Image (cartoon, rainbow, N blue to C red; front, side, top):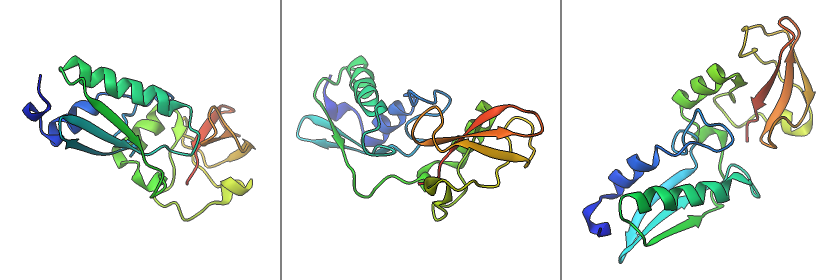
Length: 165
């Protein structure tokens, strides 16, 4: 098929079917990784921004994008990794934040201004499992580098907090 048969909006919507490999309950659009879809000559150019430099999931996401587009007949694909502007948790949609909470991950606050957790300082967080604010940071790093590990002192369960970046 020809890339001219699809609009950038149609491709963008199609790519919303790609989940984040580390957090499969949210997709790459909800996470704010997918920045742009454009056509340059006969090539579909997809622009993505990693959650942090060196994120190991980016290669998987790039491969998933190429596979998804190949499924609809688009073989000429270029995935551009753009580092500026740097990704921020402000780009995570409110829908994705609720999905994170339901999945057991405390979502980031609505702003990336507070960088306490990046400096090893604990935050007052609500446990995504029981709702208690009686929580403590166990480790600055959780299941991935972009998360911190917390524990609820009421329900005793550990949980990840998606750090504000």
